[in-house]
Structures are given as structure tokens and as C-alpha cells.
Amino acid sequence: MSVGSSQSVILSNTESIPGRQIVEFYGVVTGNTVRAKHVGRDIMAGLKNIVGGELKGYTELLQDSRKEATDRMIEQAHSMGANAVVNVRFATSSISQGAAELFAYGTAVRIA
Image (tube, rainbow, N blue to C red; front, side, top):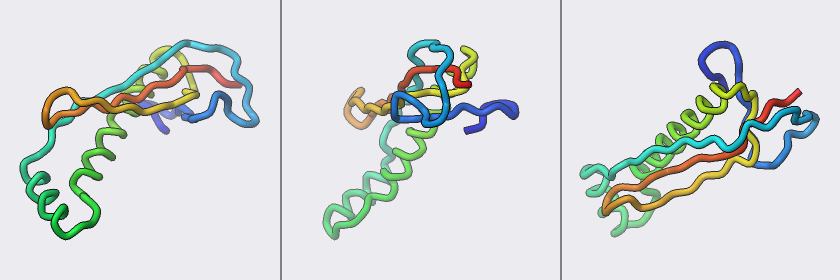
């Protein structure tokens, strides 16, 4: 994933990157976003509950949220001097009725 300039940060959901050696650990990096549901999406979701099928409005909302949280995590890792983030994980939590947080986290490292 590109960050800022021509440098990139590699993401992995495992504790290592095959074929690469971790030479420095920088610590935990995080990124999050809080999103609220949209009235229009709620109306369409209500209709889909009757007939069934994918709730595309919510799928798009989740994809956008995941990308934003991941981008923020990458920015933090990049600012620490990392060129990779290992053990990447995602979590969600309810903030209030109709609003939820998507949280991305991992360990920033430098790989050879």
C-alpha cells in the first residue's frame, strides 16, 4: 500500500512476512473511524429484510470504514519509520445507537 511518497507499507495478518526478516519493532499502531448509519441506507436495508439479499449500502459503508481505519494505521506506522505492519487485526464496537467504530491495529516493524 502506498503511503505519501513512493514508499510503501506491507500489511500482514500473520506475525511475520515470508522471505523477509524483521529487523526492528516499533510497537502497536492503530487507526479507527466512527461512522453513523444513513437514513437512506436504513430504508433500503428495511426493504431488503423483507425480500432478502445483500445490504449493499452497509457493505459499502463497512468497506469505506475499513479502508479509512487501515489508511490511518498505515500513516501512523509510516511516521514511526516502519515499512511493514504485522498481526493486522480489525475490531468493531457500538458507540451509540446507529453509530459504530471500526478499529484497525497491528505491530509496526522494519523489514530487511
